[in-house]
Amino acid sequence: MRLYITPASPYARIVRIVIIEKGLENRIEIIPAQTRLADSPYYRINPSGRVPYLIRDDGVAMEESALICAWLDQLDGKPAFDLPHGERAWEPRRLEALARSITDGIAVWSREIARAPAERSPTLLKHEAQRSRRMAALWETEIENPWMNGALNMAQITLACGLGLEARNPDLHWRPDHPKLSAWFDRINTRPSFAETAPPRA
Ligand SMILES: N[C@@H](CCC(=O)N[C@@H](CS)C(=O)NCC(=O)O)C(=O)O
Image 1: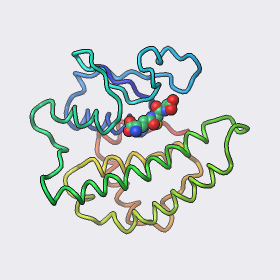
Image 2: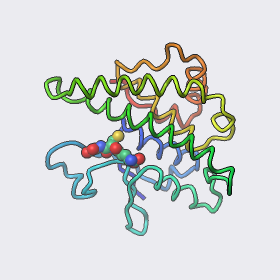
Image 3: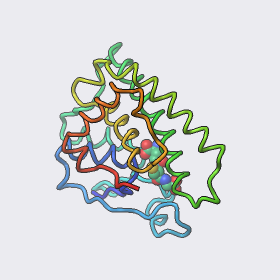
């Protein structure tokens, strides 16, 4: 199988972490893609131009980190990241949505910062900076939730990949006033799958 990524993408990182956690490294070739470039050859592979993008052994391709992770997780018949059945599923689903929310905002912000200074929207930069502050404060109150501290799950992976964008975005300061979130992040970051996929510093 082939997985197209960019080294800085938090969504590609979510999939790369699942690949390592599931021991699938030998079955999947990781290929850096050139995104956000006029006429990139990558657009002939994935017309949307986005990563992550998995091309399966049967030639079928799919995007969306959550979908790719769910598919990879069930390959060995022993899904590790499946949700519990019934009522117990709502809490991890709620947390995963909250994790995706902070990650989406920080990803949009970090992408804007990567543009040429003259092309950046000050309104967007301010909006996303404020959103990230509100979301970090909210996560400080949620991070002791048992779901965020038990067996590794998609909410934990997603949140850590969003917060990890601090390496890419010099204006992202989610740690001050959030000691519990900070300690949680430092702890989860020691897992080999997180250390091996850390985004390069901007
Ligand atoms: N919801 C998607 C988001 C994927 C996404 O936004 N990827 C970004 C990189 S972080 C991308 O490929 N951007 C290139 C572009 O927009 O052209 C997922 O979870 O996979």
